[in-house]
Length: 119
Image 1: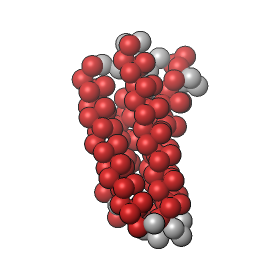
Image 2 (image 1 turned 60 degrees about the vertical axis):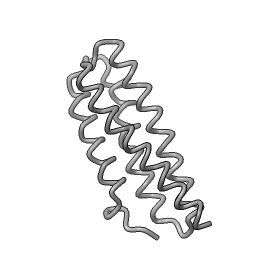
Image 3 (image 1 turned 180 degrees about the vertical axis):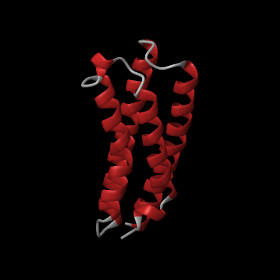
Image 4 (image 1 turned 45 degrees about the vertical axis):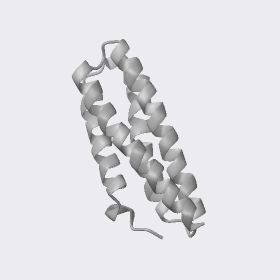
């Protein structure tokens, strides 16, 4: 079992979630229950699954939750791209979020490899 609060990947994904909340606060009001909600849920899903997985008894279970986090990260990237194409998000905000997201995805992949080696 891992202490998720001490995991750098959890910290970075929490920072990403906060950034996503800030950026989506400027989205059109009519998107509040649509794209804004979906983007925020994806962003929050990343650290949430890391935290939930860390409570599991085996590396195999933890790895499964890390893979769910990766899925959420790709879903988030797609929704951010759509938001940029709809002009809900600036190019610079998009680039900043995607840069952070790419780093998190690399960290997740490395962590999954580490967990799989422990199985």
